[in-house]
Amino acid sequence: MSKNLYLFAGVVALFLFTGLVLTSWNQTLLILNFALVSSIMALGVNIQWGYAGLFNTGVMGFAALGGLAVVLVNSRPVPEAWSAGGFGILAGLALGALTIAATIFLRRRMVKGRARSLATVALLVGGFFLFRAVFDPAVDAVEAINPTIQGNLGGLGLPVLLAWPAGGLLAALAAWGIGKTALGLRSDYLAIATLGIAEIIVAVMKNEDWLARGVKMMDLKERPWPVPYEVSLQQNPRFLELATNWGFDPVSASSVVVKLCYMVMILIVLGLLIWLSERALNSPWGRMMRAIRDNEDAARAMGKDVTKKHLHIFILGSAVIGIAGAMLTSMDGILNPGTYQPLRFTFLIWVMVIVGGSGNNWGALLGGLLVGWLWLIVETLGPMVMGGITAGMAPGPLKSHLVDSAQHMRLLTMGIILLLVLRFSPRGLIPEK
Image (cartoon, rainbow, N blue to C red; front, side, top):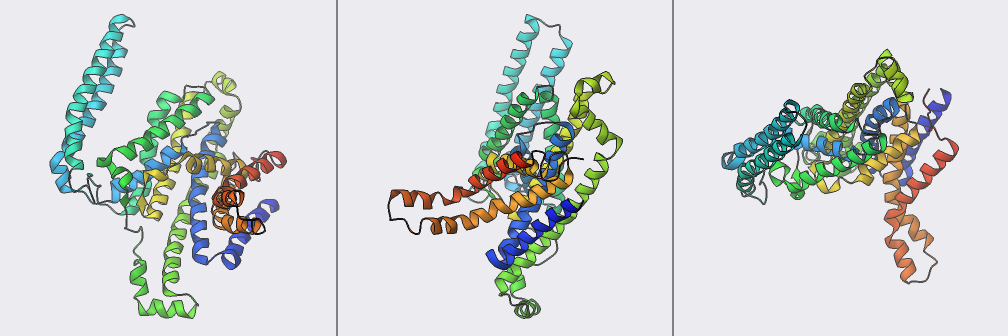
């Protein structure tokens, strides 16, 4: 127990050192909030891998669905777009879903053979062309409505705070659909399937402008708390007096206040999730999940429905990732599908889980904080360090290449950290009990 306290105290010292010496408190709070949200994603992956041994490489897709939920819940609806083709889009999507449902029903009712295969192909092809005939004109009509700033249907216009649980719900629904088809696969095939589906989700978000403006991005300005914006704070005499007394300029002080508000809200969500995760892990359900993870054949022999239990845990972990994705998009204030990359939203989260210790919720938190800090601080200090290394070198192609490659130092750092942990503490910094 004392070792764990020392580890967390060391991480706290890193953030304090960052604020006091390396960067400003504004930048430090940005890094801390990033690390806290990443810790929630790591907690979701730990639920899937640490509890049940499910190798999910589609973290990026579930985080993207969480970000999409912010747009669908918070952004204002566009009445002109709905009038032009909104209901046509809904009708097209309904036809697509109906085609899939009818195909499933048909295959269950008909006897296996050539007739069933021909009927399936005919139904799918006919349904596809009918779907496109209804869907495509409606999409063109919607995307033609003021495309420079709109060109989409908009959302429900609800408070952004409601988008956080909505992000978890949207990710959970996607996980249910993925799990029903992919959880019967072997672990390596499951990893390939989830990675491919995540890429499909991001590709849809990039190309379907009617949904969330695609690569044109969505500007999400509403905050999840009733605190004035930075500009309003900078015009408040009492706030200006308080900032002066603390030695901050008004711009930095207002930004710090906003980041502190986010930090408090993230800590509330993170604390609640860890409490629930710990309760679940130490319950009979948690012991059953670990027994299934360790020996699926023995669990089946005891009468457990392993596939069903895997589906439950897959949905729970994906929902947690979706909540974190919604929080990150809300904090950034913008949805840019181009930022969803496997390196940032899958590899980095897995590094956090491995470094912290899979199967341990506190390990996932520690790994999220430590690796999240390294990911951003190395990006900030990398050019400075490389400049010092190459200071004595003569100008030339080698020096230019090293200076230009400084931003990649964080990839090298992640690799070194991962190798050191796997060599000296293969079960992570806080191993599973």
